[in-house]
Image 1 (cartoon, rainbow, N blue to C red):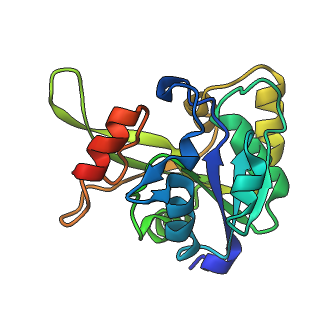
Image 2: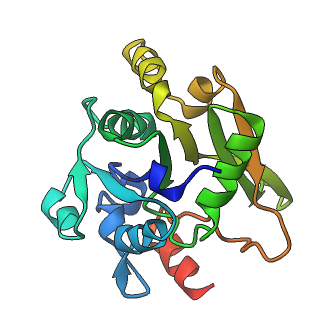
Image 3: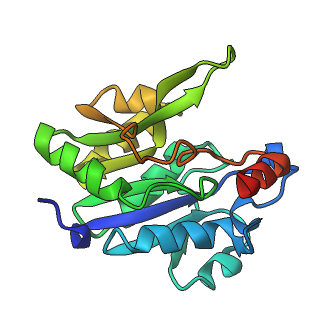
Length: 207
């Protein structure tokens, strides 16, 4: 079994927050606590150490007591820049990525992804969860920002991003990836819900 001590947690808080009016999403309160801090507390229970990827308000994130690293790529190119930063800074064999704006992600996220990665001898384990589509139907969809990665993938991701690649699925599709559905009885149906707007954040608080 993969030990939690062999996994570094990476909180992705490097976005522009454009759909939230340009505010720093990770520092917005969720039930009285900054979302990124709540994410940190949930993740710390599951891994050996945690780092944060942020591009603004670095001192505020550093006040949470963990290392904070900005994107190694310029101009806010998206989550893969955070993946790349995390893999470069990771000192353990595995890295788990979690966004700062899904404050209810599962407390057994890492354990289930790690079990699947080891069972399938995969390079990447990616979460999947029910989401409503445009017709109101629930479908199980991959959650590509919730990934457990082997650190050996750094070289591959460096090549991909240097070639202009920006989409997570396009990169993970090049590697052996196991998808782990969080659809068991007792799983929180809103575990992977993310707050892109202040209204969605309020709705998530009240649900």
